[in-house]
Length: 606
Ligand code: GDP
Image 1 (cartoon, rainbow, N blue to C red):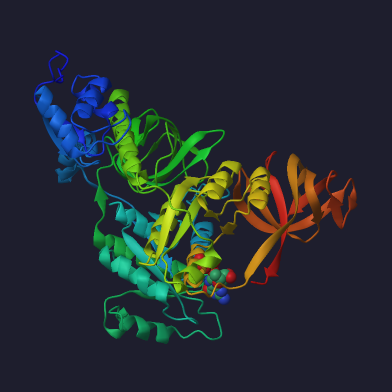
Image 2: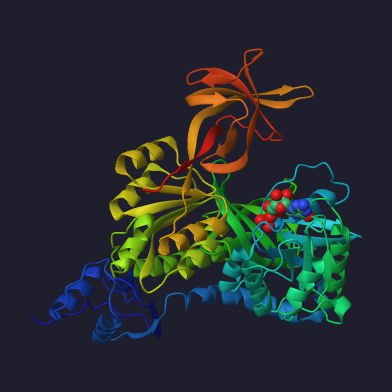
């Protein structure tokens, strides 16, 4: 019996088919049923299911059989088509010099861990909140804007080069100027050099902030010397790199630093068309249970408005609301402005581009098309079966035995930006004898599902700025799944590197001593807000260390400042009782939040 094709005519012209497509994907494109394809291939001696990836040969064979002209493309190749159509119009507008206007510079702060990036970003923000809006509640959305001498400056507020690199790896050059922070008492460190290399590769101007000059051991000239050896010669030594001595702690020189940024920005002559359809890049994104997917985007050209249909990576939708870095709703956002966008269908990835579409239909079409390509890519990546992994502490032993070790990871993080950055950094740690496999990567707290997945694949769960919920923790205990939570990227990498060398440091386990749920919030004059809580587990003790958790994500860390039972101060409150908890400087309390107290204890390695 020979195969007889259904009689329906195949579509005319060249039909584009992505590599890795299944019979289900191919059938509608060729105007045939899935069964037609499966049957045909069976006759050729190939047994496939409807959802199994087909080889190029199989697809081409079938296309020839039905008389269709096809072109095989790599996933992602066609994905951009819809976007390119959109961008063409914009490019034409951007070529028109008369439409371009000056725009604020976008600045990224990089440098070695603990050299003061975060503090510097905080100080700049505190001191320079745009005039007239001072006192407004600031909100960390991934970037913020400040005003200096009548000019706006945009700071990306995830310090470190991981975010910068992962964005660049995805083709999103969002940064105009890099501030390289070097502590004057510590000097140039490995990460300083890495950051420097990234900035140089991106051909972005670098301003050096020599920080901590208030410290006794500060040696700013040594920093100048070390950097000169790396090809960054300070202006005062006849070179062309601006270096500013600062103390983020004492707020010294920070103003001077801002002035220098203005000088460099002026030289760079940064321009963009402030009108028309907007495009830009996603800085971070998350799923908010109340608001749905929330993406922080940086507008790079045009004017993003409420009501605009847009696509961000595979997510699409109509902009329902725009929220600025002060937590205010705004109607529109122009070039170099960071805003949170509400109304998208899905959580985009950091580094994804976004673009405003001419209408809802196009936005949806481009978004869905991208989603499909992403699915095909994932399927191709998933095609290799997951090998059972080894525990972190067993990696070294396995290598010693001359066997390759596979370290399986379930990675959970608070925002997509960090997730991407961590993935990339972890991938870089791979060696011939140590493979890192991601069993699952997602944004959000660590759930029972994650633990289940880890248990079946022999994976270790790595959580960044997130915590396991109660069910997850319980299951991890019974299944013996290791959950390692971190708040500094550097430490994740260090632990894994040490494990590869068989030198895993003693672990400081953070023993959870109690958790309490916030049920009501009281305002006490002169004291501030007090959380009326119910102790769910263990015991809450005054002065104990606290992690403040909302929807599985750590949003603040500090200590229990005051603890009360009714009107009286209490030293501790046990499970099943109510209490009032006051936290130092943390006021953003909401019912349902969890206050987790913990202690650090060293666990000896056996
Ligand atoms: P990051 O890891 O680069 O973000 O560094 P942080 O901003 O977290 O700072 C690390 C530590 O250095 C913190 O304890 C800061 O308070 C401290 N620090 C930052 N800037 C200064 C400074 O100018 N002088 C002094 N003495 N300490 C500083």
